[in-house]
Structures are given as C-alpha cells and as structure tokens.
Amino acid sequence: MPMSQSFKDRLFPIAEQLVEHYGSPFHIYDEVGIRETGENLKKLFSGVEGFREYYAVKALPNPDILKLMLDMGFGFDCSSIGELVLSRQVGARGEDIMFTSNNTDQNEFKVAAEEGGCVLNLDDISLIEKVPDFPELICFRYNPGPRRTGNVIIGNPVEAKYGLSHEQVIDAYRLAQQRGAKRFGLHTMVASNELDYTYMVETARMVLDISELVESELGIKFEFVNIGGGIGIPYHPDQAPLDIDSMAAEIEELFNAFRDKHAYVPRMYMESGRFMTGPHGCLVTSAINHKDIYRNYIGVDACMSALMRPAMYDAYHHIDVVGKEDVVRDQIYDVAGSLCENNDKFAVQRELPEIDGGDILVIHDTGAHGHAMGFQYNAKLRTKELLLRADGSVDLIRREETLDDYFATLNFSEDQFHPNQSKG
Ligand SMILES: *Cc1c(COP(=O)(O)O)cnc(C)c1O
Picture 1 (cartoon, rainbow, N blue to C red):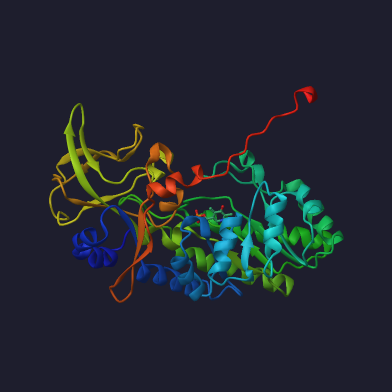
Picture 2 (spheres, rainbow, N blue to C red):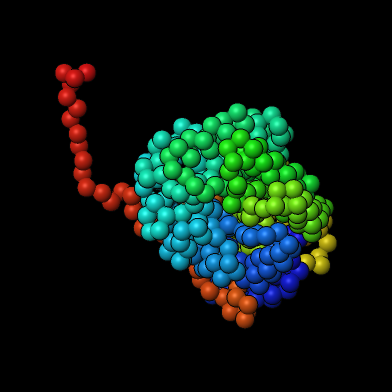
C-alpha cells in the first residue's frame, strides 16, 4: 500500500487551501493511516506472545507522531542521544525504549542510563567492559555475516559494520553474565525496504535459532528476540506490497513450534520505521518554473533538503498533480529543486500530465526517512511538517527552518587557542 486512496481523497480537495494557509512546500502526515497500520500490525501479530513494535524514531522523529505510537502501546528504537531525549520527552520510559547505537561513546551510555534507563542493545563485544553500570537486562545485536545474503539498501551482512559476528555470540553473553546481567534479549537487523515477506520470516527463524544456541551453551532463556525493521513499502505503483498477513502467520507458527519444543518462548519485538509511517506522508510542493532545454524541467519550490531519497538511493517516489489525477500523462519531465547539484531531482524522465505554473505536486511516500534526512547544504533549509488529523483538521507539527536557524551556530563566544610550539 503506497499512499492510500483514502489519504488522497482527504488531502487533494484541501491541498490548495493548505498551500494558501501554510505556504508551500510542506510534508503532511495522515493520522488515520498511521493508526490503521499500527492497529493492523497489533492484530496480525496478536498470536505471537508479547509482540511489541518499537517504532524506529529516526524514520520520523516528530513528537506528535511519536505520541501516536505511544498511544498504540508501541515503544521506540533509538540510536542517538537526541532520539533518546525525544522519546523521553513524549513520555517513554525504561523498557519502552531500545537503545540500538553503534560505535557507541561513553556519553551515550551515560544518557541511556538516565531517567529510568532503557534496554541497552550492544553492538559489539568490546563494549561490554565499557558500559559504566552494567544493567540487569541486556541485549546484543547479531550480524549473521555469510549466513545471510543481504538485501539492496543495507547490503551484505558480511560488509555491514553492525553487530556481533556469529563466532562472538556465546562469549558476549557469557561476559555479560559475568558483569551481572540476569535478563537477556537478542536483536538483529538484516534488511531494509524488503518486499519479500519470506526474508522476514527467515530472520525470525534465525533469531530463534541463535537464542536456542545460546541457551544450550549458557542456559539463558531469552526474554525477547527482536527482528529489527526493514519491512518495505511499494514506492512504485507496479510493486506489490509485502504480504504482511503471511509474514505474521508464518512467524506465529515458528514461535508456537519453539514453545512446543522448549516449554517457553521469548517475546517478539519488531522495529518498523518505514512500514509504519512511510506511505502515510507526502511532500506537497508547487511548480514555480518550467524550462525546456535538452530535457523539459519542472522547477518546484522544494529541493532535496526536504527529501534525500531520490538523490541518495536513486529512489522512485510517485508524483500526482492535484486536480490532474485523470489527465493523461503524456509529458516527460525532470522534476527538479533549486540546489546546485544535478541530482537534486524528485523525478527523472517521468511521465506526467502537462504541468502549469502554480500547480501543486504531491510527492508520495515521504512519511519515513523523508524530512528526517534533510540537511542544510547550499543553505537550503528544511520544510515544515503538518499532521492531518482524524477529524479533518490540520496541525502544524514543526515549523520550517529560517535563516536564523541556519546562522545559529555562528553565534558563539570567541575561542582562540595558542598551542605550545615546544611540545611539537
Ligand atoms: C533504521 C532502523 C530501523 C528501521 O528501519 P525501517 O527500514 O525504517 O523499518 C530499525 N532498527 C534499526 C536498528 C535501524 O537502524
């Protein structure tokens, strides 16, 4: 399910008013769609004991969105101090938060332990001795290496910097026991934007297998296994969505079989980002220029500071022109922003209806890894974010950046240092 018909039906008729009221460009998110996806996920996995989604905060780190997640009973997956602080600001505490950092520094361990702590998910065996106050509950991220072949975005596990190698797993949990850990979890993340549900089922099988291996060596009964994020969404209209129903049914079978064999079963966690919010957001931008040279260009008022994915991953994002949904797509355009980089294009050689100045373009599926990936290169600033509520009202949930924000880091006290030359 890319951008749903229901979201379109509620957004397109008011798009012009929104542009008039808030100005363009903006990202807008759909409360109804996010809640439907979340409730459906809970329903589908209700047969897996203790199932819980930990929303991957990096996908859409906006407090109003995180409140929706908390409201549905979800926790948060964080991997930086900023994400930890944000999650706590909206009310998450303790085991509501998984801290999946990598290349972790001491300051991150310190903040992770504050305010009731969180679930520490350690990325490496060398970090065990670096955790200042070792917690009772500990989790490790597992990297299967050559045991799994990767998917496109995340790459091959062998080349991925994350997690423990297979050979380190037993030692890692043993060392954690020696440091006083009594409760255990196991985590992995081997896919990104995966549309083949069987890959996710294999991941669930893999973490259960590893938990079995560790139990047989160390007697550890895992409280939970976490299969990570990575459920994909069909960005292109020709792609079929991941078959989440079959994924849930087959994973439930795996967990039931585990329980039958061991007389206990770990809880299952998941950390979807893209799947939860990706299709429930879009970037609304206005056509401001049209130039015809070797190719025909539509210049819009948003640029890649609002959406990096096309430039960074060559990603496809479908585009509609408001009011021209039924107009034949008989033009070929590159849809470009204003950044001085030729890859600042939302679409390349795309079939679109004829576009006039002032037309409103809706760039689909920007609800995850969209606004959040923005940056300020070329002094192009980030857009505002809006939330379309269930009752049809719209809230501004983040203002756009201003030049004052851009210049804020130039406001500092002078600090000139004279290194001691003799120390060479
Ligand atoms: C990015 C990330 C996720 C979310 O990935 P999606 O592809 O958005 O589902 C989950 N867990 C970890 C550790 C991540 O880094």
